[in-house]
Length: 309
Image 1 (spheres, rainbow, N blue to C red):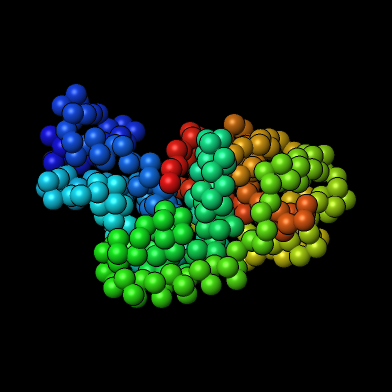
Image 2: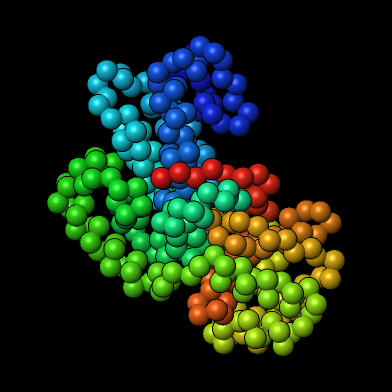
């Protein structure tokens, strides 16, 4: 029955019986599952950890007396946020020993994510990297307030702070993010144009064309996690980045994809995903390249992930 299940209902591979579907706790959880995953993912930058948070949320939710719950959505979000915050602190310690740059786990997303401009902005690689610079509680407060529009009292319950303290944390986090987030809104078409030029240059080996699409101070971050080869430090400057990209095997197939709500490229070698390349574009030029190569982070690129606010 629902209270003893070890698999959160709605998970792929979970078998939900007719009785489970009729259970009020299960129905509420399934109805908000995509929202809960999105909250956890934005707080953690890891789909695998977000899935674990869903499991933990379900186990706690299944034991709640629903008669005491006024707003099931808000209650579930508070549980998920609390579990994600606890995991975020542990994740921070893991990142300290991570080999090379750490990048968020990329998600193959449906077109409707891009249509929600705020959601797409909040899950972009560039924004998730900005959120990485916040302290765990600051990140939780920022995500819950700015992205999911929870009121201060609800956030206070999730992070074990007073509403007044949460307001101060939110103000500090907003100022921190504003100083570091990408400036200006870049249209998907501008990103696609830059990516198409980038793709043609890489595929043809035209290094001059590649230089033309890269900003002079472009930065490439490569995440191999110590599992596959990747630059252990940021690669800065158009010439250095071009030199690195010029070594890509001619057998590599580049495919456009929608990653974290934005146009990106998937590199395949012998049919297998080798790299997911997200970009940041400013004034028509690529200013940031985020190359996720760690195989442990590529499992969510084989099927679309549904995100929801």
